[in-house]
Length: 217
Image (tube, rainbow, N blue to C red; front, top):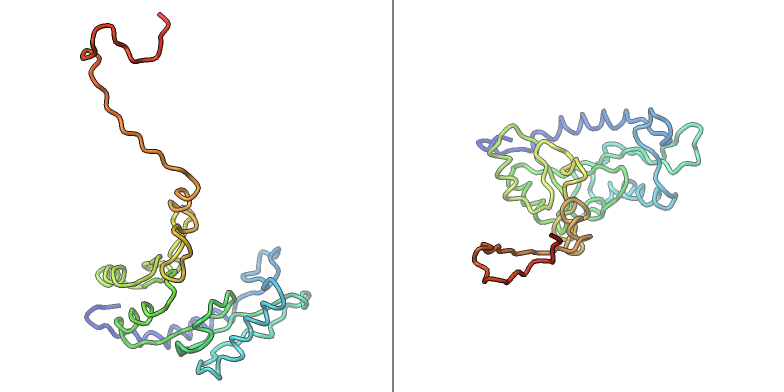
């Protein structure tokens, strides 16, 4: 992103092509197979729910670039498999955009400019995490200040790469007063104590007055 040329929409076509190529090459398999890059979903009901976002996407204005529904793994046909699906040009009215799918469905929304992108993200009722990829430190700084999300990554796709950072968002992506872990987790499970001290000089004590504990001489 170059702040002198704030058009960002031109990156979409080559990005979509690379994502499609990588997604189609993912290896699905059981979790005990070290070659597996993605496993099955937890139940058949959830598999069907995730698949419904893809099968109904075109009717809601999305472009289905990659359809991972109906995927099976040889020898594990009874698993709840769904391959990665890629939806492009997703409108904000589509269910795939409005709902948290919790499945391998990647939705791409397109904007022409940086300002349109920030406005789109800030208009969402959710504010969990977001990221910007740029070589421009000024663009990154501006994004950090303008975006309304609890976690921001700069050239980091998952904004919380380590467990001791607080994980949690803003707006409808946060329930309660504290985030899940990190410093907020410590605050939630502990009770703070404040101690204020002042130590007078012992030489100022009246003769014969000793407020300390008894001592063995």
